[in-house]
Image 1 (spheres, rainbow, N blue to C red):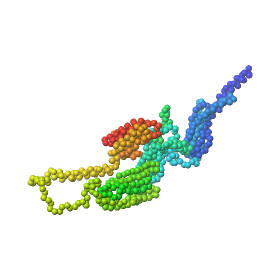
Image 2 (image 1 turned 180 degrees about the vertical axis):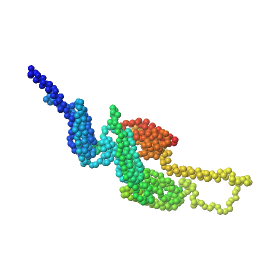
Image 3 (image 1 turned 90 degrees about the vertical axis):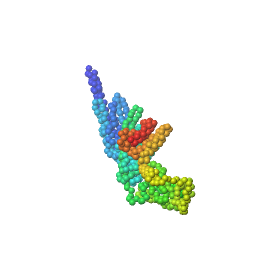
Image 4 (image 1 turned 30 degrees about the vertical axis):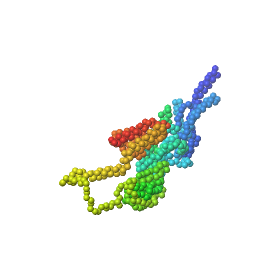
Length: 582
C-alpha cells in the first residue's frame, strides 16, 4: 500500500516541478562583440530569447546607425528528454562621430510578464579615416539614410569671380523617387544653371556607411556685391519604398545652408575697367584696312578666356569724328561647365568713313581684375590704321549719290539766260505768301521733324530697354523652343523633351517676368503678375510644370504624359500673356 502511494507522490512532484524548471530557463540577453570602436568601424549587436516564442523588436540604439540587419536565426534542441529553443537577431551598427553611446534595453512580453535586456554602453573614439566635408558630415548627422549636401568650389571670392555650387543627394534606400524640388533662394548672386543631365549614381563610403550618390543640381554663381552672402537650403520631396503593393513613404529632405565671403575689388580701378573678372586675352581686328569713302568696315573686339564673360559690357572705342559708328553687335561663344564660364565674347562695330584720308585708330586698351594675382591687369591691342580712298562715285557704293563737300563748285558767274516758253504767269496781287498752301508748306517741316524726333526717341528708349525688348519677344522665343520639345515627343526622346520644355519655360519666365532661374517660385511669379486675379493659380501651375520637367530623370516613368505636359506648358504661356496684357 505504501509503495503505490510513494510512486504517486513522486509523479506529482515531477509534474509540478517541470514548469518551474522551464520557467527558470527562459532568458533574454543582449551582447556586442566589442564595447569600444573608432568612428566608422562596425560593432555587432546580438539579442537572444531562449525558451520562449514571443517576438521582440530592436531597442533604442542611442544614436548608433544600422549598417546591416537584422539577421534572424533560430534553433531547437531535445537532449535527454529536455527541450530548448532560442531565437536570435543580429544587427551590424556603426557610429559616425566620436562619443559615448548607450544601447537601451530590448523588451519582450512573455506570458503575463515583461522581460528586458540590460543596457549596453559603447565608447566611440576618433577614427583614422580622412575627415569628411563639413556639408556631408552635417547631412549625415541630420539623417544618416538620406540627405543633401551643398558645397561651394570656394568659400571666399571677389565680386564678379565665379563660384560653382554643387548639390549632391546621398541615399541608402533601395527605391527612391523625387517628384518635387524646392529651389534654393539666392540673394546677391548672378546665377546660371549647369547641365546635370548626364549625372550617374556612384558608390561612396562615409563614416563606415555605404551610399549611392548623385549630383542633382549645379549652379554657377557670381557675387554681385561685397559682404557675407547666404545660399538658403534646397528642399526635395522624396518617396522611398514604393512598389506595386506599397505606396511608399514620403520624406522631405533639405540641404545645408552655406555662406560665401564676397571680397570687394581693390580701389583705384584703371580707366578701362568695365567689370571683367577672371583671366582674359584681347584681340582687335578689322575685316579690311583699305576702303573707299562710304564703304562699311567691321571692327571686332573679342575677349577670350575664363571670366564672367556674360557680364562684360562693350568697351567705348574712340573713332575719328568723320566716321559714322553704329551700336556694336554682341557675339558669344561661351560654354558652361564645372570649371566655370569660359570661351569668348565679341563686340562688332560697324563704322563708315565719310571722307578720304589715312586714319590711325591707335590701340584698344581694356582692363580686368585677376583674382589669382589679386590685382588689375591691362590688355593692349596692336595699333590699327585705316586708309580711305575717295572712291569712284558709282551707284554700287552704299551712298554713291551723296553729295561730297569737294564736289560743290561755282558753275555760272555771268548774266542769267532769258527764260523762254511757258512763263507760268499769275494774277496781279495774288501771292503765295499767306495762302493755305504756303501755311501747309511752312508747317509741314516742323511737324514732320517733331514726329521724327518723337519716333527717334521712342526707338532709342526701346533699344536702351533690353528688358522690355526681351519681354516683347518672350512669347515668340518660347514657341520656338517649344517646337524642340514637340519634335522630341515625335521622336520619343524622353530626356530631350523634358530638357527642352524646362529650358523653354525658364527662358520665357526670365524674358517675360524678369526672373532668374533661382527666382522661378510661386511667390515671385504671382508677385510679377499682380493684380491679375488668376496670378496665384498661374504661378502654382508654372512651378508644378517646371518641377515635373526638372525631376523627370529620377522617376522610371513619367508622372504626367508628355503630350499633356506640353499642352499644359502651352496653355500656361497663353495665360501669362493674357494676364500681362490685362
